Amino acid sequence: MLDGLSNLCDDYCKKLVAVGCDGASVMLGKNTGAVQRIRKHTDRPWLLGVHCSGHKLELAYKNMVKSKISLYDKVENFLLSVYYFYRNSNLNRAMLKESFKSLGINVVLPTRVGGTRWISHLKLAVGCYLKGYKAISQHLSQLQNPDDRVYATEKGNKAKALSKTVFARDAWHMMHFLLDCLEILVIVSKKFQERTATVSEILHDIESSEKQLEKLKTRLR
Image (tube, rainbow, N blue to C red; front, side, top):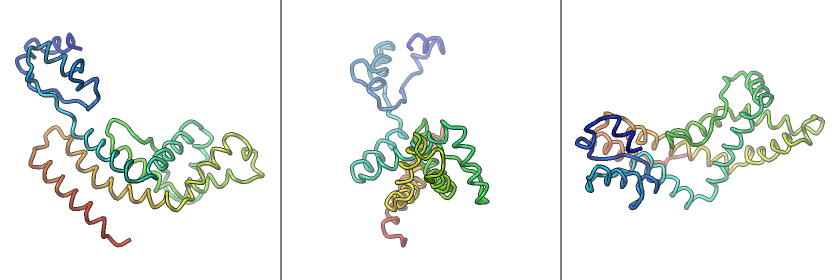
């Protein structure tokens, strides 16, 4: 890694003042982390290691929901299971598209939870699921027909397990709660990731998001 940095710019040592990264110990570890290695290699003990603000927001969000809301893990695992149920089977995906077609609504396939843009991926996954809810619930219900040849197969068993959450009222409410919160947090997350964002703009978006989250506590359902 250090040799690679040297190849990028002969005098990078003279220009380097900070390193931005996620909060993993391999990056910010005080003894053998990447930032510490760069400090030693460049003879700059004062070099700043900046934990990515987008990643910190993601960690803060997850720590909050996982410690306060026991249903969160269930919903997150469910969204991931739905994604793989259709991603790993061409037949399931084709039948889901047929379900969308029969209902006369645009096809919105499930997306994966998680990714390099953190909160934005979760918001997209929740939003796609809610938009495709009618088609997904219809297709999974069709797989519950005892006369269907897949009823007693592994696919049928997976469909049964998914259906329990699909038709669970608490999971449905949780999805909408997450979407309300994530729509606000994503704005801040994206602002953190803008190359041209200024401190004043970021502070403004943080303050605005705090006010909007507070309003959710009293918003009429």
